[in-house]
Image 1 (cartoon, rainbow, N blue to C red):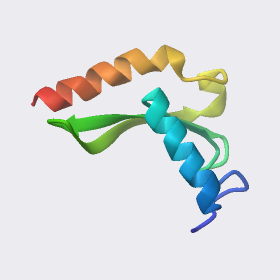
Image 2: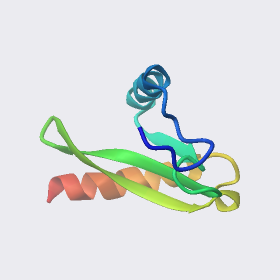
Image 3: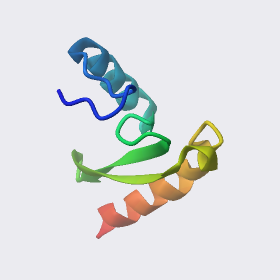
Length: 85
């Protein structure tokens, strides 16, 4: 697996653990894994009952103040609007 920054998860076992955590909490949250200093939160988009894609929001790490919670509701509402279409 390609490493983009020092925070990129490249160990398959660690990645599997991260994916299990994402599934359990219903969203993905990364800081600096692809671009240094960039935080990203993503939620799934479903087609029926099947995962179809994701909707994400990224920005400077300091704009997230260490957690994505204040953006999750809006992101989930946008994902649901896409699902209805």
